[in-house]
Amino acid sequence: MAATFRGTTPEPPDARPRLTVLSGPSGVGKSTVVAHMRKEHPEVWLSVSATTRRPRPGEKHGVHYFFVSDDEMDKLIANGELLEWAEFAGNRYGTPRTAVLERLEAGEPVLLEIDLQGARQVRESMAEAQLVFLAPPSWEELVRRLTGRGTEPPEVIERRLEAAKIELAAEPEFDVTLVNTSVEDVARELLALMDVV
Ligand SMILES: Nc1ncnc2c1ncn2[C@@H]1O[C@H](COP(=O)(O)OP(=O)(O)OP(=O)(O)O)[C@@H](O)[C@H]1O
Ligand SMILES: Nc1nc2c(ncn2[C@@H]2O[C@H](COP(=O)(O)O)[C@@H](O)[C@H]2O)c(=O)[nH]1
Image (cartoon, rainbow, N blue to C red; front, side, top):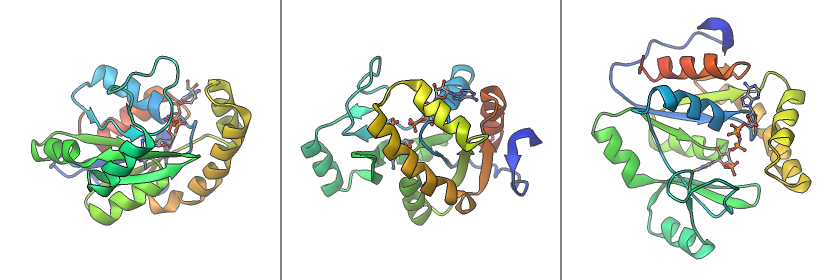
């Protein structure tokens, strides 16, 4: 397991299922790792976020995101329905609160895939949450992955890379860093951190 860990060895996982937050710069491979992990372990519950971003080809409402209007997002925020929310590269994203709390109450392992600002909010409101940072093998590889994905125009890629500089500098705030060199290795390590295997 040590292959992709960076920094100190994490504490052994607590026996209780708890909230795990996966963050890291746009394009590092968070969704790829989570999809790989959930193929083998569908019992890991992934929160579906609300977003004002437009769907990419193939993205489905209620599966990848709840795609909402600006007005709907305003209401979710005003009504306190989000556990956390943030503006990222021109769109807003937030985690529906009730579903997360219900799953934790039911004793299920819960995973959030969110940005740095959201991770900081979760740390404030749920001190027991485990914060995992997914890092790229290098800056050049991050640029290659984000550009190679082909889902954003150049100006949006620039905004995401500007945000990535801030996110990479915040790595020490996280409990654990995993370097995404191999999707399979990182997925296995994340499962172990969540005490699923
Ligand atoms: N270990 C890896 N090696 C090579 N390519 C990878 C690896 N992990 C992910 N990728 C590729 O990198 C690109 C970005 O991955 P992905 O969309 O999962 O990133 P993300 O962190 O979820 O991004 P965002 O935060 O923008 O949603 C995809 O094309 C994916 O196939
Ligand atoms: N703070 C939150 N960030 C979120 C949430 N859902 C996703 N995200 C993060 O936004 C960026 C961009 O995502 P993309 O799908 O447009 O590429 C990425 O870092 C996601 O992890 C959320 O609910 N809250």
